[in-house]
Length: 592
Figure 1 (tube, one colour):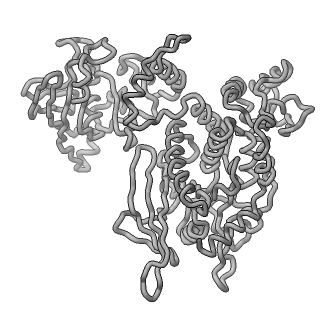
Figure 2 (figure 1 turned 180 degrees about the horizontal axis):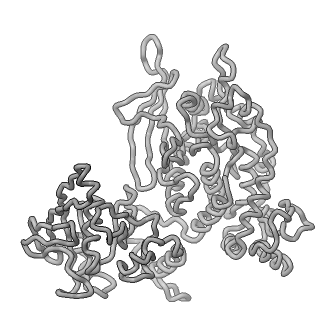
Figure 3 (figure 1 turned 45 degrees about the vertical axis):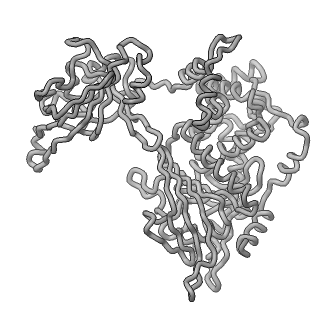
């Protein structure tokens, strides 16, 4: 281990304020006191109801976490909660959402430490967000350059988990000005991995510079640290990259020291929003499986580095989820409120708002309910047998229980969430007005087909395993929406169409929406579909079509916009009769 790493390790040991917590770990588990999850009294329930409805202003409630005179303080879970009671705790907060706000406002009052170094004029320009800066007592101190003042500052903080001191370093996303300091810190602290929770560019703002080379052939140099990309794995919601970091002798150009470092980059978490809980849980599983192996192989490795754009809200959410799940794996309990207070004592701005705090609860609840559904392929046969066995009490097998749980966890969309499908000029474009897509996930049509047409079709994007929005799922077109169907295929450059049923011929309810003969057919005012070829197999039919689009928009015609023809292949499975729950041939579905 290098001298700089040893010195930084010493600094971390001196900075930690978690001594009492680690002493507690030596005590027998049975002596621990776990929080109650019940509302303590009827008057307290009435007061919560009045707060929840706005009859009492939250500003008038002066509350501290351990105020025994105030019955509301007893709803604060200021001690760890056993996993078996956590569902009750979440249910209580669904009934009284004001509790999230009470907890959050109580916890953020603990931000009382000094930030003199971060606020100095010489360092202020190195901070992306003045609300997310490190405290003096636990900031990461860089080794100074000789005779150059203020080169020991980087916007980064050591943060404890619930079990380990200095388990994380939280920092802001590097800027053009601070990217050198970022890599100096990574090398000095011997970081075990990088967890990146932001895109480099989000909407109209640069969130973080790309601090790694754009491809494997490129090498970037920051000070005396050389960086190359060894490998990259792309998944729907995140990327995993392996970096090679090395230093060279200035005279001989020989490599003097090198390390491999993994970066886990979550790409589907936009600023001021919350992602899907199941996607974050899978991301965290992948991070922990790798980092755990690294720590076992090298006990001298440094903290895990976590950053979003400013080292605030999203970083705090990830730490809260990771630290509580680590505690659950060790002690079968969560300490959400307690860890929020610890986070706010460690760095300004960690967990930015009540919505993010609620997301932590929701994600941990999903972890408790769903557990880890991942398993190796080699175990598939055994799992199928186990899942088929019915429970003697519930008379349900694992498939039925899992499906019921999925239905229970499915989010309920409001009419506002699905405004496009409920508009007056779109309502008759749905087979069922109660089954319409949410606006955030529907594909918008861009081909102009006339003033009576809109950008709406009843369809949604669905993630694949390796790509976001890899699929578009839609209903069988109505007689009046066949033009929109081909607009969807054309506008989103679909390479294949998969049809999983065969309606009765000449059906008025399910009209033919592609030419089954060798002739061309027009759908709507602008799309003409040409038959190129077809192949029919047992239970599967296949066609190749050319989509021709006629430009009728005056604006596009004046601009000289051309609409080149596009080719698409359509596959139809004919062994899944309408009304049947499953196809009659499993092999045909696999072959398709």
